[in-house]
Length: 436
Image 1: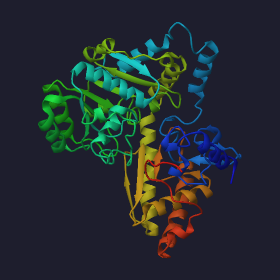
Image 2 (image 1 turned 60 degrees about the vertical axis):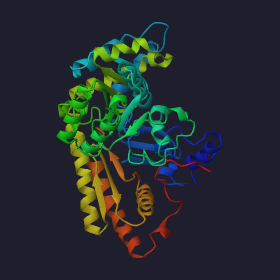
Image 3 (image 1 turned 30 degrees about the vertical axis):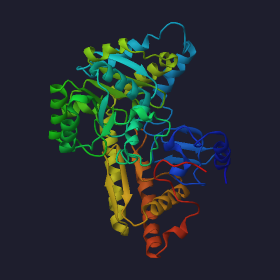
Image 4 (image 1 turned 45 degrees about the horizontal axis):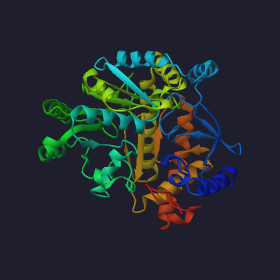
């Protein structure tokens, strides 16, 4: 057991849930064996507390480091901002520059507000939208964070959110009075959306959806949502927290001729520094002045400076083409190695945000075994890969060679009839669970 594993055992006694982010919980990867903590990170390389170096071929800071860890240009701008003072009684002028830049990139938008995380930015967007619409009911699809407005969907059915990224999300602590104020529909399910509209037409004030996640949007689906929301004066929010700046220089909705009333950004817009933006049409955004939305740390200088440096770099380099190239190479590699060694898998996701699943009666056993084997070969890996500008051909080639070795071993383990016996620790978790 290394320093990271020992520290995590201590953390579980001091921090409910062990970590601040479920997606970074070691049990989601390799219980008892995942390094858990890092000492430093650069490019796509990560060093644990014992000095072991790994190539990160998994989530790259859960999708936040789109340019790679410790990017020279972004970090340089942030260090300069820190030297000038990140906080003051006065406001940082960079937030005005950032608002102008985001509106320039998205000509349909006219105003912007800022926060520091994707989940809270979505809550701000929903608050503004409800205030504008004068109605409480939100129809949504996809994953949008941990806040009450979203988790309230599971008050009506504890499985309402299971098809929206994470199963088992418990709404404990969410006021029961919020039951029925948020209802899910499936992405690209035009008929399902229309059924909800027909049933709750007079009560719906807001529609929320991700611009894209696992599949490209169906034209009829997008056109229907835009027409219905306009006709019924429903505020449309597009969540760009995950997709933003990965497929193009801005929100992915720009690619689909899909103009929302509000769009929300976070993650890749600031390359690992806390920053989020809510942009929208003036007639909608100006309603924010009628409801109290305010927080001290939304006014720091580091966030806007990091976002400006990140976005300006993205505007100069062909980031989307690189992410597509790297992500496609990985997805093709998964399929090639799986076919070669007879390991049935299903590959999905857009190229910058790819994933695969094992088609086996015990998929978690094979997923845990894969992560275990890849860690031994020097890779932080799971059944997903988020591409960054720091990933180069050599990283992918070395990774896919290791994937081939792991798939060959996996095939042998399955053939033995008991692949679980090859695990050196417990099974990984698949969703939200209480730690004991």
